[in-house]
Image (cartoon, rainbow, N blue to C red; front, side, top):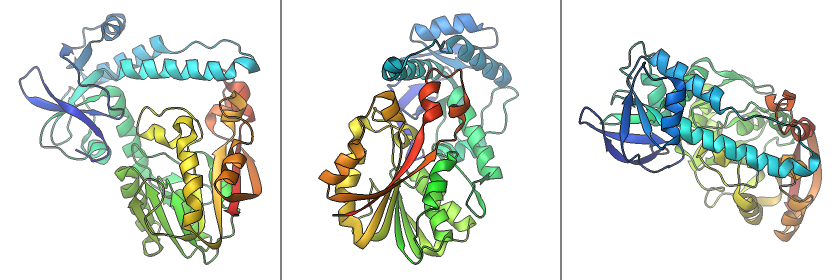
Length: 375
């Protein structure tokens, strides 16, 4: 089992074997499994899922994928016009709908054999995708078809690599690691003057910000992340980009022990809400606790005259989920001066979707880079 993936125990399969249950959110072990196949209609499947049953798919893989798609269509949230005053409540309602949908879809599962193979008829090759996402295991495992399809897509990204504007060379993302598809963050990081400086990249993920700054002339960088998958991903990327001699990755909650740097950069989780999955921790920060801990601890990891570059979306302010000037007030309480603030328009795909119930706020979203120094 991959060390960063939740395992919620073992369950007995219909054939009598014991199987582990893989999940990204740590939900409870199913009480029992209901074996289903190609004869199951989508409406009947949805009724069973809403009754709390966990469905073990035994039909052909293409039909299981089609059933999943039909369930997604039936569970798609309906959008209605909103007003500015409603945006925060609408965001929470939308997220709750997404959470309920994910819970239901996560209960349509398939058996992955110890070698990573799925023995459903006409199943694709899954061994490499399973290895990258969840590692090896000596026993069968259950995983939702939805998560398995995500792992297959991520494995394709890993194989092909990803071009990131501002980075020389291709990056290889991994399943469960936040992918650098939001170009505004990289563009802002490139504005930093870091020549011959040491760096700490907090919550490094793929390592993209550290790599961009190393290519811009930084002397060395240490990346940290809580998820071992991110550490593996960043180390692999450093090797492929020829940066291994100047880059280290360490599993840590925020800062590496006993390290100081000239520049600390953090693409912080920006939504002050509770994360549900491990990947959610890249986006959601319950009550802003991670942000506050980061600002409180940052001065102790700065070299004299050093700087902190905090990258943060202003979407929570636009939704009324975070008060204006919260970051500035927190920084001041933690002994940091706000020297400058750089901004860039958010350019991710959701800013271009008028059908999104939060389009009004997303279309105006800005990413800010707070440059901070010790008071």
